[in-house]
Each structure stands twice: as structure tokens, then as C-alpha cells.
Length: 70
Image 1 (cartoon, rainbow, N blue to C red):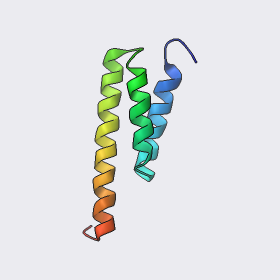
Image 2 (image 1 turned 60 degrees about the vertical axis):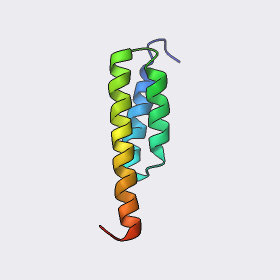
Image 3 (image 1 turned 60 degrees about the horizontal axis):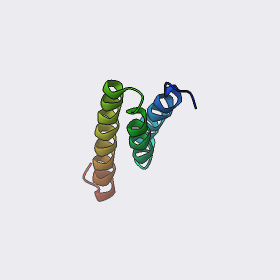
């Protein structure tokens, strides 16, 4: 893997986009974001925050769909 963590950043964004389709990918985006923080603290923190927000939002939306509320 590259020393600057670019591959981790790309994979984190791929998982964030896939989280919209299936919330289970939120776990992958959070893991990649945490690992990316080792390379760039500021960008890694922002990426982690985005991953958590998208993951939680999609879990809530899918839960509401499961219950038939939405």
C-alpha cells in the first residue's frame, strides 16, 4: 500500500457511496477512515465524521422502511 494512504481514502469513499445502497458497508467506510487518520489526521477525521453520519442516516432510513413508516 502507498505510504500516503491514498488507497485507503479511495476505499473509504467507495464504502461511503455503497452505504447508500446497503448500510452494512458503513462498517467498511468507518474502518478505512480510522486507518486513514494515521496518514492525515485532519482529513481522516472529516472522512470518519462523514462515514458515521451517512451510516447512521441510512440505518435509520432502512429501519423506518422496515417498519413501514416511510
